[in-house]
Length: 384
Image (cartoon, rainbow, N blue to C red):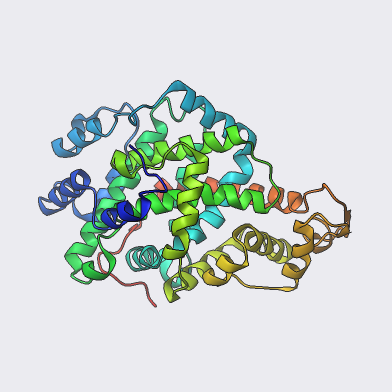
């Protein structure tokens, strides 16, 4: 039975100490036996995996694991698939962009998660987080493709992420630097399910904060999609997010402030992400974009993440209430000076601009398998 608000606190405590035994044993064995030579070679091997491929060329242990990992979530149905597809049919552009901004920044608000990401990937080090952000974008692209949940595409790509998580755990284990008593298991089941909350119910809240209407049926469809992803990340049924959007929101609202804190790692990574976004949204558009993210997250969490404040934030407040004011986002800040009235979503223009810009990031993600540079360093360091 999936998580419920009633039992989530005690279940998450247990989940914080749990990894993914099958994936962990596989990755450890492959690396130790040098059947896949090192962490980065393993990552490149994972990148070649396709749904329905012939596994005979892979190490037997990896092939056996992948076959077992193809099983659908318990109780998964055609109705769940249709509900998820309907959500993405209506909200594909803005939700992909919000997952790639509000969602990723939300994961930086978990102190353990922020440390893990910063210490293992360097996020491009001083050069910026392009590789990690583009890799994360792959999942969002896969989720909104029609038939992705029936042709094996999404399951295969989420399984790659599952193996990457196992590789991160092995890297920390071998480093001797991870504080298990303080942080539990690296990339624990608690962190995995928490991240699924950030990318699902937190995004639905962000959409409401921006005045985007999401029906109850569509919210259900989005939760079906993340229930599916949560399963293929290797999460046991007892820690899966339920398909009930209201229940997930209840449990997330109950636990969020226990999990989200301001840390140097989180602020560092948010700053890198914001600087990276400037490549795709320069000038005034970037400032309007950041103001929109602040509104989507709310000031409380935007301040935790270290998102910059500006004059545009002052303009954004009355806009969110639908008052008759000069637009700070859709008009004045982008040069139009158009007057917005009650019933007009002031974020519509920048949502469109940002969603279009994110297609460039997504294209980068799609072509990024051509990158033969290390996707993780063999030691814990980030050039800080």
